[in-house]
Length: 332
Ligand SMILES: Nc1ncnc2c1ncn2[C@@H]1O[C@H](COP(=O)(O)OP(=O)(O)OP(=O)(O)O)[C@@H](O)[C@H]1O
Ligand code: SF4
Ligand SMILES: [Mg+2]
Image (cartoon, rainbow, N blue to C red; front, side):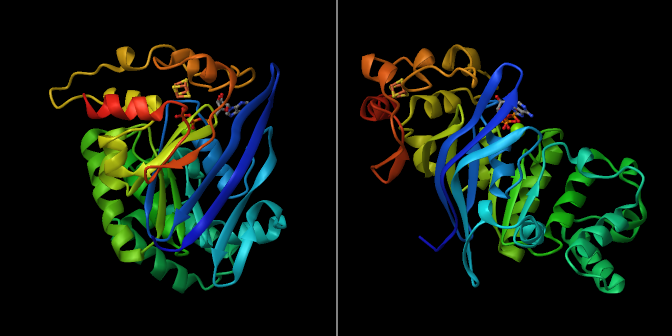
């Protein structure tokens, strides 16, 4: 494997809520390798967006990071983003690590033209040469197959959802970040536009050579784009593996359930039968393995001891009974 560009260890984050502390990240650890696409999958509410934020040292709203480290490695050495002063972190955002959020519309200020979004982002990073910034913006908008002259003069509401998503990509790539985190970039889009964005991402990655974390609950998109897949459940990664291994030989019952919930070619969906029940309340998660109330393999050990993410079989998995899960997946 290539070099590690981002190393996350035991990352913990809590939200304050009226009901108590929401344990949204409960000890997340993984390495991100240069040039790869890592898809982060899991049901709604499992902590994917929270992880995206935390990776750039942002703690949304009432959140507080309660432990762990996020180490960025570059020519300048290794830096833990969670201990950097805010001013330095702000410089790194967009220029080293860019996060593009779910809901592209919310990313734009409705009363300023697209070109000013580019100018403002650049200025915040010390790029004040207007001509140079607009040349770069033009180049990036063209790379995402938009009519750059028209789009630069437009207001956000004058663009379609798919166009805004592409503008957001161009904006995110303006400062040539090494790591790009995309949170559900295609959710609000129709299937044809989704396909265009996925093709475009592949093309942009080839041209600009960034490392990509792709957050999605659409497994078929993840399968197409990713080199590796990480499954998240109740604030923790429960499986990480190479994309074909994840889809062909899932080691965790939750990953297996997610895969079986993907509509078949005939369009059938067995979502509700594949994973009964719903994710746990993160204010009061169950003891032991957080998946045990929904897991067909659960036994006494699962109810009392939470399995750690361990390397088995070229894979990382957190399950006491992965051998049985794998045997069943292979015998299906
Ligand atoms: N501001 C907040 N205050 C309290 N709890 C929050 C807050 N934001 C998120 N949460 C909780 O944290 C958990 C993780 O939320 P997050 O948005 O990261 O999930 P997600 O995996 O991105 O879901 P989705 O697929 O729906 O986008 C959820 O249980 C959610 O209810
Ligand atoms: S540890 Fe037990 S309950 Fe958890 S996923 Fe594995 S078999 Fe299921
Ligand atoms: Mg989300």
